[in-house]
Length: 378
Ligand SMILES: [Cu+2]
Image 1: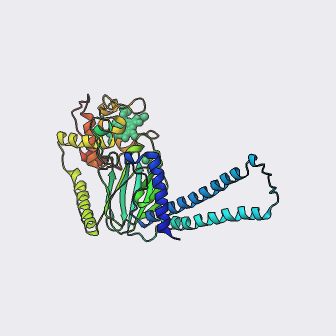
Image 2: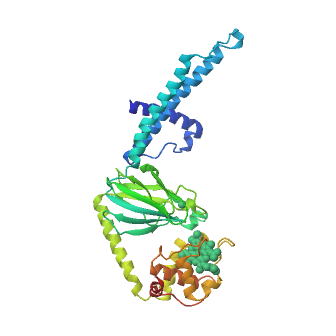
Image 3: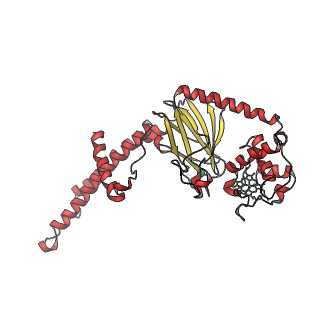
């Protein structure tokens, strides 16, 4: 089929519609994001082809209907014809929709089959949805062993209206998923609490992340760049605050990134041996708290009771260290308080607990060393 001319016509028709509805003056983007993978390009073509087809059907059916109403109106004394048991008409209205169905289903099935073909990837990354962040584990291919969490990086000041919004408002993260250009990347999706969904529109890649299940998707990005998406399964209070950012880089840059990540991992693994000062722990803990705890317990430490209890003045936070570490590391079953033991390192756990014990009105004056956290791990 003449796809490019079909595409032009469809683009034109959509353009006219878009202009009519939103007003060009607004400069709103009305089309799909530019495709960066073969699959996304196929999806766009399919979308435009079906759009064209339904436009033709729409004009044909309504044109015919309006013509019939007009040409056979009562003023002309038209006599209604009898259509019962008309075999020709019955065959036509069965066969024509069948043909329409086939010309849509055939190309659509081809795209869906290609989209589901996750065989022979160059790199496999497991992506875990958490309330409310993403965890990335590179499980196969170059970069194997790299593991990090990716959190919203938009400052709270912008979210709460105290600072102007940046260009990537709510679509920026601290740790981006990095992949090499032109390589087939398989993403395994799963979740640790509720259903989330991983989506990068420019890749035409989207898959639910379901607790207890592993689903997968793949993409092969043709162009280096930074591509942004969001969690697209309503997953609770901060659903709109867990964006996804994939940075596609050249093979050389990717290898460099893998090298530096591995070094950082090794350094982080060394840390627990070191004895940290109270101030060091508090400074580090404030960052860990801002990234992992504010969503529920708030920057003020006051929480939003009764759902999310305050840490400021909490008996647990001001009580024995071991009991508090137990809550933070193992969570409270059947409450939103997750087990952070697996998500945070020894240093991060020691730091955040120390921070909460010595911030706001809490003045225990004591500190938790990474070694103490390590000792509690089973
Ligand atoms: Cu989510």
